[in-house]
Structures are given as C-alpha cells and as structure tokens.
Length: 370
Image (tube, rainbow, N blue to C red):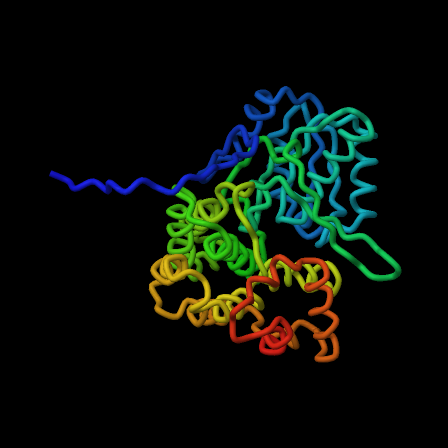
C-alpha cells in the first residue's frame, strides 16, 4: 500500500491567463492556419525583427502558413521595445486593418505585439489577437505584461504594463523556428527562464503545482542547455522550450524579485541586452539570499540544480555557456553603479526589501557584480 501525505497543503490561489492553446513539437508551425481560423482571424500582420527577417526561409514559412489571411509584415522591432517602434508597428497594423498579429521572434517582438494590441484596443476599439511563435526562451509568450522603453528628460526608462487582454491567445513552440537564434541570445534567454523559476520560489509563499513545475523546469533546463546550443539539436531545443514553460507556467501567479528588477534598469536605461541581464544578476542575488530565504524554498532550488550552493552553480552555468558575468564586461562603468542602485531603490523598493537581514546591501551587491 502506498502511504499518502495526510497534511493538507497550504491554502492558496492560482491565477491563470487567457492563453487558449499551446502547441509544441517539430513542425508544429503547420498548426498556424488552424489556430488563426479558430481565433476568427481574417487579416494577419506578421511582426518580427530585422535580424530574423534576414533568414528568408524562416520568415517565408510563417508567411506561407498565414495563407490568405496574410496582410503584410513589419520587421523594425529592436530590443527593449522603444516607443517609436510601437508607434510605427501600430500604424502598420491600422493600415493593413489587421485583426490578428503573429509575433515571430524573441521577447522584444512579442512584447511589441502586446503593446500594439493594447493600442489598437484602447484607441481604435478594435482588439487584435496574438499568436506567438517564440524563437528564444524568455517566456514573454505566456505573460500578460510587457515593457516599453520611453524617453523621460533625456533618459531612457522602460515601463512595465500589465493587462490580461493582450496575453497571446495561442503559442507555437517549434524548435525548428529557433534555428537562426544566435547562440548568445539562446543561452541568455535560458538563464532568463531560470530566473523566472528561481525568483518565483524565492519571492513567493509555497505554491502547490507551480513549485513542482518550477523545480522540474530548473532541472531540465540546466541539464539540456549545453547540448541545445547547437541550433541543429532540435530535441534538446524542444526540451528547453518546454522546460522554460514549466519555469513560467503561470506568470500572473508569479512574484519577480531583485534579479529581474535590476535587469529592468540595466536593460531599459543602460541598453544591456536582456539576454545578459539575468546571467549578471541571478547568481549574485541567490548567493545574497542564501541562508536568508526560507530554508525550504532554498532547498528546492538546490535540489533542482543538484548543488548545495545554487548561486555558485548558476554562476558556473552562466560562464560555461559563454555569457558575461560582470557589469564591466557589458559597458557599465564603475561610476554608473551608484546611479543604478538609486534607480532600482526608487522604482522597485519591494524588491530591495529582499535583502533585509542579508549580509549585503543593494550597493555592495551591485559592486560585487561590477
């Protein structure tokens, strides 16, 4: 007879977002026509980046599967979602009378699609549904929030917006469509995925279901990442895509912490690629909280990474995949560190409270990363 756990789980709540369908597997892009039909799309605008648009074959596949619903494409979507790019993409969607957006790209392209959908809904009263075909592991395709970088008094500031109605309605995880993703971007987005799961564990109370998924995602992603760096290793890449989903399975129920918040300032204001930010911040934050996060939560992360020192294990993983490990390697000057600390403290005080009781301050933590 199997002994059953009799202690009741803690009371809680799980918030789910309006993602209607997720399909995965090699060749699953072929499901796009059926998904567009299911969503009632008649005019589809493909959003992508200039770098992906250079791979004529991949973009052509997306266009071909849109079929007669294809209304055009917009490819001027750089990293960090600058406001002027959102304006231009919105104008293109209006000109083409698009009622659906296919976001083919990484987190910035998918966030830009959300910003366009929000603008169309608010200003035109004409919502546009999104189908996301991600090429990285950032997890933006599952989230209801997006960042847009705006200029304020000559300083670039990335603002986060949250609204359920722009969550992609459908997601296609097709490893073949990641073939053109640069090694550094793939690896960096994997660390971002780990950041979702790790911070979800560190910053949230116990969460039945989500904690188990986060632990599984951390272990599988850390195990498959090295092999997946080969763009032809489709099985490993598919495994990473699913592991990244485990890491970020219910974004509306996830609390992100100091690692992500420092990354917002590094990316939005200082232009550090988001593929680099989590690799810079996550190991240091986990080390700082070692012994100060609840022992149970820290033990889950340690078990998932098969290491008694998860901060060190994460640092070794970042280094092994060739990502920068110090702020000075990405163009941040020592003189910039006090300003970065000030912006993080002013904009994200709740995240900084994670360091309460720890042996390091925000400034000393940033100094150690520099």
